[in-house]
Image (cartoon, rainbow, N blue to C red; front, side):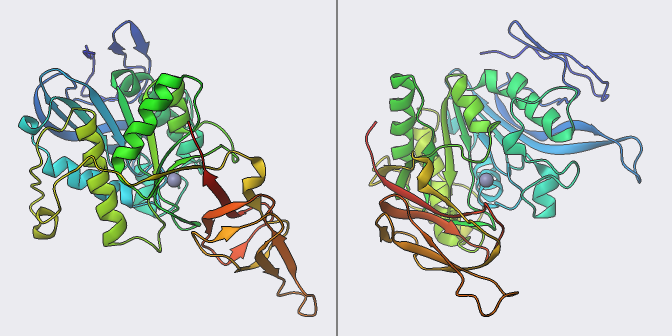
Length: 368
Ligand SMILES: [Zn+2]
């Protein structure tokens, strides 16, 4: 799909970006071309007026790599600001891939919620909102919703593949996975699972939204896009293993899509050059958490003593956590039990819990 953009170098409100027959009245704009071969590095700019800068723009990094015709991959990191696997992976990917190594186009946003990434916070420090609950957004929304709207109206129509790289951030530990919802279209579902398997993570994970709608992947899925999310560990699992899995896995997915055609890795960093060539071989296990009871929420606030670790098998009725109450030292505390059987896909990483915080996610093998 070709972009015919009408953009201005001035952040004029209600600048129109025209994509096909779709008109977006977003206030965001970029002068990066989407339809020219080559590697283009710059920013999406969003109007922002602050106490110290009355006339200002928020700069959101954007890289477009294009070579001829072929599918378009739209890649996101930093949807949640305290999940740095995505930003690091996409920055390395943008530097390492040259146009002659691809067929088609790769659009990379390494820090979708740039203020949150710079603030090491899950939510935006500007409007307090969760980018991954703001989709599809509105042009008249707060900043987070305006960015979501630009993505929904201007970028997603260009995409065949949408990848949103997440991890558990500070709050949850995860077994690494490429993930998705179970969508109604069997052709779309099979394509997403095939790409998920190509990632080569230990798991391909089908999950449900138990904490609200408005997710970027949900919206992309609703448009029929081949969509992948990830949970690449957590802030405390952040390290060479999860970063290598994110980088190599995303390259394998781009190869499986027919976009990345070369195994050459040129990041300029010796450790990265030594990465094994991308391979579509996958040993992933397909699992899901599709029951409401798979998501075990804390019944009370307190200090969590985890009784199970990632990967442990659990049976219904098994104690998975013990909540202790520092204000009542004589109390025995509260034992939290699994209500379904399977294994621990995720568990809370922060020792303090509030009532309703997710303590454990139980998953089990499944089919599509
Ligand atoms: Zn996330």
